Image 1 (cartoon, rainbow over the protein chains, first blue to last red):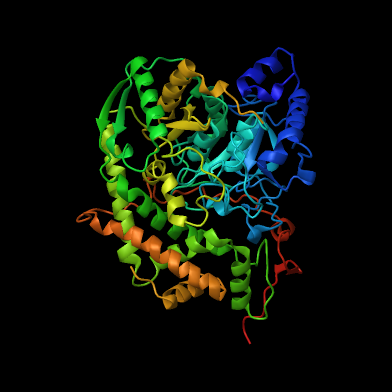
Image 2: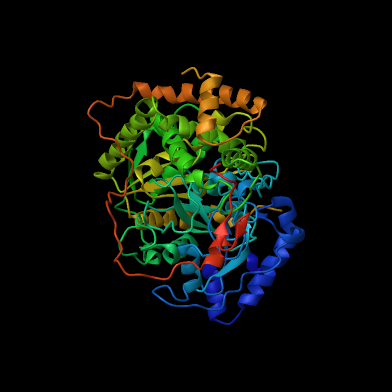
Length: 484
Length: 95
């Protein structure tokens, strides 16, 4: 039986009816991995290129989500701390790092009964990228076309779900790093509201933008995984003390009274014509389901990418100062302390990490702080105000997730600016702190998946799940799977 | 803006990153192109606009002042590239 092809909620039903055991699911995944992982390379540090074992945590069921994900395998991005299990952010500078503690999301997954896989997923080094090419372990391949990137930075998590090598996956999203790869790989991915999910144990990239979120094969599974990991955590002072709703209650509701804004700035030049057609059809489908749509304006959209590359790199330059060869990871020996720092960081960081640390340090340095960093923070306010204004009148905003389908490996690797522009539709949500989901909405002629992005009000993930689920029920794009 | 190699060298020094000469060349060129792109922010009207460093709207989040156990020393030091007698060891700083 091909259990690996099923969703978490389908598997939960089988487990409850005793038609399958967690061991059956695990061995089905093992078998699948042996067939496909050599081509996809979604995971890192696998012994012999194969999944050696699953982290079989003894049941620790307790709390409000006890048993929510009983027996369901989940894999974790390489920037989320797992106690005793290597976590390297796919960077040479963290080589061999085995965290002394579990991130809060890992603890919550254990409490929900999930089986956390003993293998981490590939990513751009420190989540710096949109293609998973900036990994010290080499790129992950898109299961729909192995010559193409899976998107990034959580490309390994997205590809593992798309290839049925896991049932669920966890990633992180600082400027689109969950939604864009979900779109490229034809799976569901969500960036929750800033503060919805604890960041404790997430190795920080940009602390005012980072958020952990779910990857899944359908919206129902996305709701389950979000519910399992969401909620206030005293260990993350930016996590919100707001009750977590039962997200599965948003499934199956109609969207007749939903008011959708369509930002005109998102449908302009630079967009792939096929993506435009597919997304326009998806919007028509939402209308046919009873939602009302109106053109709206997000007037400062053009500034989102430049603001992001100041704010995110400034925060990254500060966060990455901790990698200095003293407490963990790589150390390049030198007789003077300062030379030890410089050589360790010079050898340990990859090209994109160096680019971003230098850019961020520059933006914060004396003489440039006001012209770059402070100015970017002010424009960030304008971008946030645009969203606040729209959400006074509308329930959600619908856009493409990415201006193009997956590009080929190497295509943008030499042009950092071109790579940055692939996040043009996703970055604003991180700057404004609002939630966003990407749901499959069709295929190009070359059979590459396209994603529809739905953005919502802060802490209103329910409307995103409701709208995405209603759309998915009528379209079923997720039923088409890549042939590997 | 134009970015001199001296500026890039200075910023790399602040960042504690040693660059090879060819890296310095390439990064100078790339960073200049990126900054040129970022300079479009000059067109935004920010008169009277307050900066947003954070969207959470939280300030001074405190936990109760209750002592809890912390990581044991051996776990804390487990990943250290060089340790001795319960300490991290680094090159001599004071001559």
